Every structure is written in C-alpha cells, then in structure tokens.
Length: 49
Image (tube, rainbow, N blue to C red):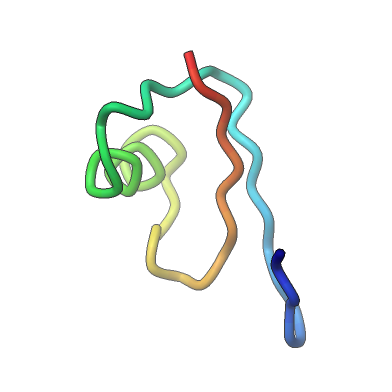
C-alpha cells in the first residue's frame, strides 16, 4: 500500500512491459521511453505483456 506524503506523481504506462527486464530494465523504460527520471520519487504503474 502506498501512503503518499505531500504531492505524489503517478504515471501509468499505456503499453505492456516485459517484467523479465528486472528493476534496472524497468527504470530504463521510464527514462528512455517515457522521458522521465525513474529516481524522482514518482510512482510508475505498468502492466505485464
């Protein structure tokens, strides 16, 4: 369960993602495909392929 303090940005990916990428690969998806900083404190919601 996420209990946000202050402002929390939540980004939802519309395309499915291959979760076999691991945490580093998913962070790379946030950075390269979504153009966002994966370490910004935001929450990223994805669905599996």
